[in-house]
Length: 314
Image 1 (cartoon, helix red, strand yellow):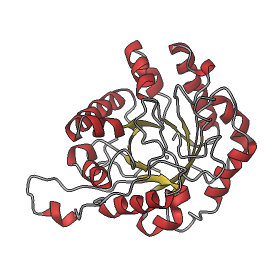
Image 2: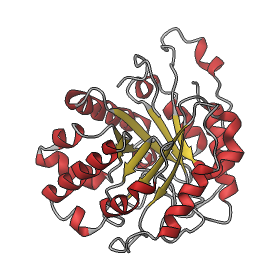
Image 3: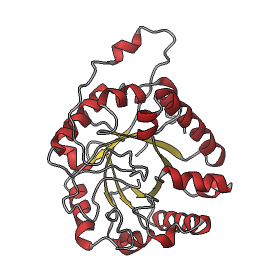
């Protein structure tokens, strides 16, 4: 799972994600792994100032190990603005999450097609990019699975209180059963399955002692790190990434660890510093860089995404 020793970088969650929620027909924003503890920045689109950190800044420190490739996952809706900063194995993603607080209502065909059309507009045949689409409900995957194009490599499942129907999260058994069924469907199409849970749901399964059952069937685990970085700092994020990587490695050494940081909640300079941190880099396989939306200044988030991509050493 360590990106420094893997021969292939990661391809993207769920999951997916984002966002083509039921209340966003244009699918132009949101975060890939949404979070139910209100740390996702809402619709804030404040512009940020980027530090001038470059690879040369790290080269002179003999105690800093070299940083290897780091695939990133970004909002496919920003492709035209950031395509010059993308590299082979980066992932362009859209998600079809249910409307926040209306999780019992399935997504519509129109919402699904917004995401598919956005991804279809991106030609990845020559640049080595990969595509991902994500859902917040097993039922929605069952509805649209056969309509997902073959050139979408990843399908994500975002298990979240405000987005996932009650039947899929009413207790530990139902959560694990839904995750396993989701993975089975994804793998039946020869695609990769990404699981991006809210921290509370992850913690509930961890406390049950049954994380191993989940890790055995997924191809990547999404860690929502934006609130940890904002509220507790880089050191605590580093510790959490290290801990989660060890748990995943023990159950499924082939699974990847994806970490999301969030523009609007985290400043570009913070995201760059975190993803250029040698310890974090040694444990993760993909950096998920998302931001709030839709909102009037979504263009600012696209610009900030480009700033982050330029600042990453990869």
